[in-house]
Length: 563
Image (cartoon, rainbow, N blue to C red; front, side, top):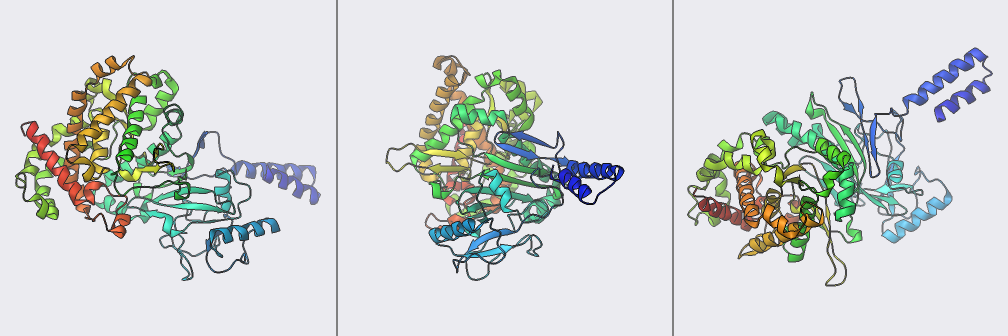
């Protein structure tokens, strides 16, 4: 509209002839059309706008309906320390905005602005720090083409009218193996969002996968499409509203997968933030009983809500959208995604066990656990994830449900009320490996990766499993999978649940020994820096007591099955 109007004004001011006026109008209309998304350029949901176009290679390319392609973003601003003056060159809409910004800085105890212009030479990989304040992760807060994101991008997503700047402190950033993210806080209002950016070619771990296991990079690329599909789905909205599962909304997603050359894939997500300032926190491992139960209740609600035959499946459109958008078989650890692991367990056990030699060598499974597990690894892998196998899928249909696929403790955000008996709120994030599977195997993943060993020993594991099962039974009836409690128990007994749980447990042990333990980094409970550094790691990759518990339980399950 702006381009069309500008063309008309220009034509009028220059006194063009009718013929030239028509040409000018046509050109202006074409310019406006170039800046507007096509009907199929992006998928819009109440809580998510997923941007998608096609480039010359036939791959998805980024497109923003807020900014015309090629338009340089406005200057980016971040808060630092030193002076209460608004710096020269900062964009403020009015004197009132300048005063509001100063007031915000005084209240926050921060008082120095630094700016990063669109033409900056700042590299993609390094946060800035002028030596006078905290570092800012300006390398993360960029679009998929590497340009700094403007204030307006965040302001519009958060529906904020008066934002004039934002902060992105390095202290609140996350830098992982396969993604980088940070908290963005608007000024002067203080509203926050969480921005996640994935540029494979800038990630060392992605480059390693390209060399050693390129098929994994293809799966990683698809996993981000799965996240966008689920968070934009009616199913996500329904389970949030009807089951009370707290899933942070996705405010915007940009997807640029490159199927021909996956290392060139790029993605970004702007997510609803659950910040510490609002009382949300994460645990290094879950140890508090109420917090462990809250996580299990969340999983039970999800599993029951999407259980085969539940009321959800009466909505044909929502069901079809979910089926088409997520993994046919959930969970990153499954054998189908790691086809070489089953034949590596015995060999890897010989070397990886040495990392806990002092603790493990006293057990009678020290010499043979790897070979015993390898002997059953293929069968266990198939039965733990039956929907990845056509021959098994049909016989497990009555147990089929939607699973998170990666329920480690870092993916649970927790908030408690001030009263001692107040209810715990729990938010669930990161649905990259979510799809269809067995609820018991999702729980096995949770127990082996999220819970502290002190909560699992001396019968603690059994207590938590019984708690989950009782919660699941309750919600299976509530969400319409079964008409009453007796029917729920008859169709999914505790013994069936435990048989599937043990199978999933063994499959995870296969994954840990054959692959995951290569990144084992033992950290003591009182090592605060180590806990922060390993926050995103699973329990078996950072806690010696958990690793010992895991292998001991693996041995017990194998013995119970005659292996």
